[in-house]
Image (tube, rainbow, N blue to C red):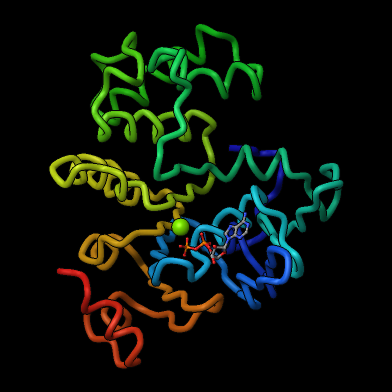
Length: 258
Ligand code: ADP
Ligand code: MG
């Protein structure tokens, strides 16, 4: 947590009029979204609808073409230093963690080293302190016996739990999860969803891109349906997943078992 930035009320991360183009392809066509403290928002929608681009813009791994991203009410900019009403990308990224479909662990580092790397390198946390933090997080994701293992000796589910622990080691305010179970064998999905469910119960603010409809409905406070670069529908799990009225949405949701 970065306590240097005062609280600005409810919204932790906001996108305002967010647009993103790749060359002539406009992928995000004006999106407004706010994540409130402790809120879990599920982002669903067909492949290519812009889900990954949206959450990558939320921590500025992709630079928006137009519109703004705010963290606790402060505008973020590539060239901004932290000051007054603006903050820089580094501060945003330390506060907004991300977990990807393909884990992106460092293959030549042990599990413990993967988790301590961010705190030691980015936050200058002393090694012993970073290791203590990492061990606590690895216990939290059920990997207390894997400190010295290398990623290629782990199952996909274990790798993804390491990736979650690694993101948590930065003590982010918000976690962005992009299809974190999509690359897993079906029998390994549950152990990762259990960890995410526990984070939600502990009050972590999260945006979760997922095709696990039952899980999305169960874990989220709000669901957004992205379609062709816009938020085509947003509401409760009941309105969006369980009883959708919009025809395109109903067609999409009915393709998944839930
Ligand atoms: P989703 O995550 O919903 O599947 P994405 O955000 O990955 O969708 O992609 C939305 C659209 O943007 C797709 O048409 C995709 O091909 C395109 N796109 C994504 N990233 C890039 C990129 N770096 N360069 C060019 N096109 C991209
Ligand atoms: Mg995607």
